[in-house]
Length: 411
Ligand code: HEM
Ligand code: SF4
Ligand code: SF4
Image 1 (cartoon, rainbow, N blue to C red):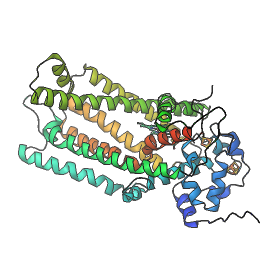
Image 2 (image 1 turned 180 degrees about the vertical axis):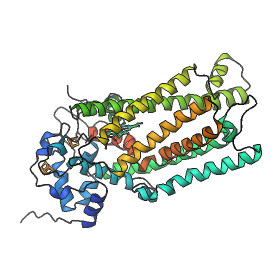
Image 3 (image 1 turned 90 degrees about the horizontal axis):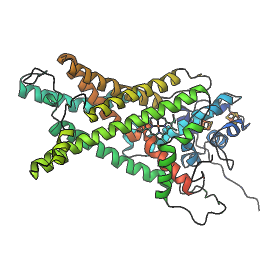
Image 4 (image 1 turned 90 degrees about the vertical axis):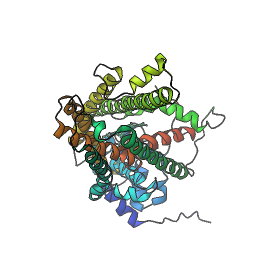
């Protein structure tokens, strides 16, 4: 009896894949150079050559359940050395883009995030929310560009933190977390059919949490695979750029956490509800009070984070602009992410500067744009390329669990 494998190609899928960044996949003639030169690909069933065949054949199920697309760090070495200009690195990036589009619910947002033509709609949602708040506050204060009693710009006059900023962003955050939960479940389910690798000396499969801790220790905190991915000067700049952007986000997250807990836990709960007046409560409420003086450690951390973010973005953007387009392309997903982070950084720094120089007609509109940019980064995160922050971390942990990558990096 022959062992026949039925190939069921999905031609629409091939077209869809080409549309999200895998245009050149038909050029591949299966020489396997890409799999040999990839610095990260395991020796056993290496990528990305096999993905090129699957894509040409339209093997949608194999590709959508393939954990290897998350192991690739998109250095482009394979595409640089491909003799046919088939851009295998771009194919793996296109598959990740498809995952951002389809994993999280509601999938309508995935569709809107997949093309520039829906940007006005995506921007209109936060713009409408903050415009309504602006109109209402301007009517109450009888001034659309108010100053406080000392004649200073204070953003809280137009957009009060307690009643507008905090509830809107808390809801956006909750929405993002729920979407990530649905997306991560779908991702883990898609990996169920992945073969397990037998490892000599390994008695039992490690738990996912242990694998997650190792992933955070190596790939997230130290960027080990990023360092191994490409040794050219532009690869080193990409690694440094990512490290700066990543730690800038961590710093800004710490600042947001300190301000929120200082204000709500220290000021409102301990000081207000419980009426405590001890030094700890006072320190906590002080840390949560905005605007804060420039010398405050929280403000210093925020400004250091903003500086690191901008330097990192310069590195990453310059690299993308200088890519040899014949070998490696940039998709809508790549540019959307860089642009939205730029928008957050520039409007954030701009809002601080314009507030300090008290230019109220420029300061309030800049702050309004900042709120829109932050909302777009946060609320649509699971459907954007930044979804990799969760999906890649989970996939790398799962890859450890099934033995696709070693628990600790070699060397
Ligand atoms: C707050 C967290 C993070 C931020 C802000 C961030 C930001 C970014 C940005 C802006 C890019 C695009 C670079 C480019 O255009 O070339 C990128 C790519 C990348 N990030 Fe992150 N990242 C974060 C977390 C992570 C984590 C946790 C990992 C690993 C587990 C990771 C791995 C990667 C990889 C491998 C790429 C290149 C892949 C690609 O371009 O498709 N990132 N990241
Ligand atoms: S993508 Fe390029 S390098 Fe890889 S197998 Fe095809 S032709 Fe060869
Ligand atoms: S882009 Fe880099 S990591 Fe990804 S498959 Fe190609 S060589 Fe490997």
